[in-house]
Amino acid sequence: MTRTPVTIIGLGLMGRALAAAFVRAGHPTTIWNRTPGKAQDLVEAGASQAPTVADAVAAAPLVIVCVRDYDAVRELLAPAEAALSGRVLVNLTSGASDEARALAGWAAERGAGYLDGAIMMTPPGIGAPQTVILYGGSPSLYETHEQTLTVLGGGTTLISSDVALPSLYDVALLGLMWSTFNGFMHGAALVGTEKIAATDFLPMATDWLKGVASFLTAYAHQIDEGSFAAEDATLETQIPPVRHLIHESRLRGIDATLAEYTERLLTEAVAGGHALDSYARIIDHFRPTPA
Ligand code: NAP
Image 1: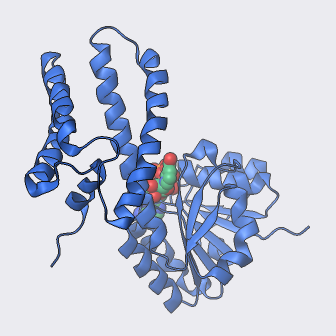
Image 2 (image 1 turned 90 degrees about the horizontal axis):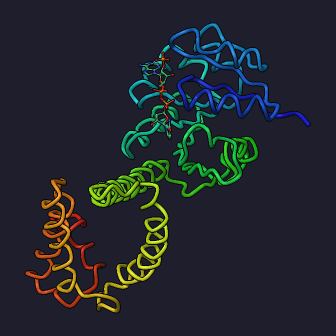
C-alpha cells in the first residue's frame, strides 16, 4: 500500500512525536524546524530533512504545522506561500477560534485547503488508539485524509465543518482540566497538613471524580432545558460546606481563593432568587451578559 507523503513543520516536543508516528506508520515523512539540530534521530528513523521551509511544503500534499502559536505559523510559512497552492495545510498549533478562522482564510487565498486540529493529548500519547484529535474544516477534505490523520490518534474525529470549533473545544476542555487540577492540589494540600501523602488521597479523589462526572450529566440536561430545580442539593445548602472549606483552609495556612470564589458564585445566585436551584444554575454567571 502506498501511504500519503506528509510534511511536519515544527520539531518541538509535539512536532517530534507527530513526525515519529508517521515514520513508524510507514508514511514518507519530510521534516523541517526553524532551529537546526532537532532532526537527527528522526532522520535516522527514516524521515527526510528539508533544507528550507518551502522545500518542506513542496515535498508532500499534506503539510502539518505544529509550532508555538499562530503568529509563528504565519511567520514561518511566509517564504513558502507559493508552494502551498494545491496542498492541504493541517494546523495542529494551539490557538483561539478567531486565529483559526483567519488562518483558514489566509490559506484559501493561497490556494491551499485547510483543516484545523486540537490535540487533546501530550506527546507520549501520540499514535495511541485512545488519543483524541479534534478537527474542523471541509468534510470532504477531512475524509480524503482521515486514514492518514488517524495515524496520530485513534480518537481522531471531525467535529465540525467550522475550522474555529476545535480551538473553542480545546480551551473549554483545558479550562475544565485546570479547574480539576486546582481542586486536586487544594485537596492534597489540605490533607497534606496531616502528613497524608497525595498518593493516599488519590484513590478517593479519582472515585469522587466519577461521582462528579455523574452530577455533570444531570446538570448538562438542566442547562439545555433551562430548568434548574434541585434534585440533589440546593444552592443554599452548599453555602455552609463551602464556608467550612474556607475556614479549614485558613486554619491550616492554605490559600482559600478557590473556595472564596465558589462562595461568591453561590451567594450571588442565592441573592438573585435561586436558593432552591441546583448547581447548574451557576451557568448564568458564566454566560455572556446580554447586550
Ligand atoms: P515546544 O516544544 O515549545 O516547541 C515549539 C516549536 O515551535 C518548536 O519547533 C519551535 O521551533 C517552534 N517555533 C516557536 N516560535 C517559532 C517561530 N517564530 N517560527 C518558527 N518556529 C517557531 O512546544 P510543543 O510542546 O511542541 O507544542 C507545539 C504546539 O502544540 C503548541 O501550540 C502547543 O500548545 C500544542 N500542544 C502541545 C501539547 C503538549 O503536551 N506538548 C499538547 C497539545 C497541544 P525552534 O525549535 O526553532 O524554537
